[in-house]
Length: 462
Picture 1 (spheres, rainbow, N blue to C red):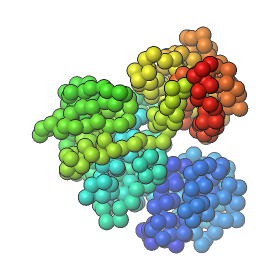
Picture 2: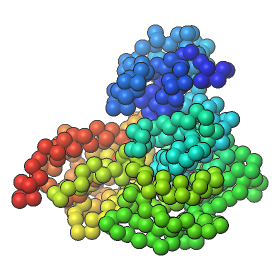
Picture 3: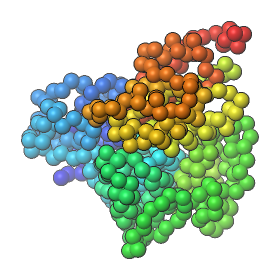
Picture 4: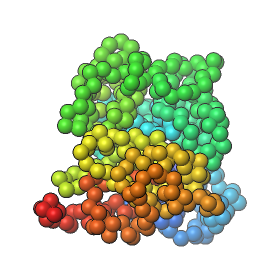
């Protein structure tokens, strides 16, 4: 197969996915004609169209022809999609998204970030550090960087590639990085792995993929069986205890943490990231350590960490006013919910917190129902939306009502998305969180518009 960058036409099935769209953008900017299908028009697909990429939203198998050099698909695509069915029989090379990423990264210095949570923020911050340095980097991100309003960073003359390494469908096993970060190994994707031990085994296999002489950087508190034959140099990082990289002099002032970073050869001072939350301090330690191990100058690391404005839908402050604090977050796992809600409680200890949560996947809701109920009980008020099915069929007995009944609190309600604004009008939250990985992001601008059109002074007087 030819190098993808030298092809004339590449076709994407599921082009609007966050990982797929970054690859589509990369090839488009390399001069390749890029086309694709997605089920729904979104802000991201509109941006792709505005950049000159052809996107359509109807199943059109007649568009799949032998003029295409390569077809790329996401595992989330329905297997009964006519375009996919034709793609499997026409004789055109067909790759999963992870396989295309493997081809693009194989001859570069790849820094890959894996973990059941934290990987999107860590990889985006690491990319920002390298991109602002003399080394530069190309980055395929699992979220939209607020610094660049994109999920793709591009430095054609750099050998560094930063990428999020996704454990879903074992996609990350396609990669052979020079440096890996593993942020967490908590159980998730049990619809794929069945057991936590199987997931841990996949993370161990991922670590074994590191190139000879490479580096494994792992959170000290993350459990992972390490193969004794692993040839990589292993480093640990932590926010809570001594490790190869750990923090001291942690202080909180006006919602912003400052700290120093202890490294194997000394202390780097002056960190004061603008992102709130202790979990973001931990994310910045991981990214800074990886940059340090990649020989990025200390002053560049500190400057980049302090100028990082975050990732859309990751603890994303949308409105900050006296009458309302509105934060949007992608949290869709019990541990992520706990981290997000706990951070909000520390930032706004005098305020009551309302959370609107959309569970993601029937299997995840089933497997972690008790954990979800415990995490959501940290809220003062809970609004629960129906489960977002994504690629799944319903499971009998697994519903949002089932989950709602498990949450040990009185102030809870099950609503549909069109009922949200009326709920906000009647209840007037002090701090509002939208939480979840489904299509809950579609109501975020609606909520923003509602609050931006209100008279703040009238609300305060009430």
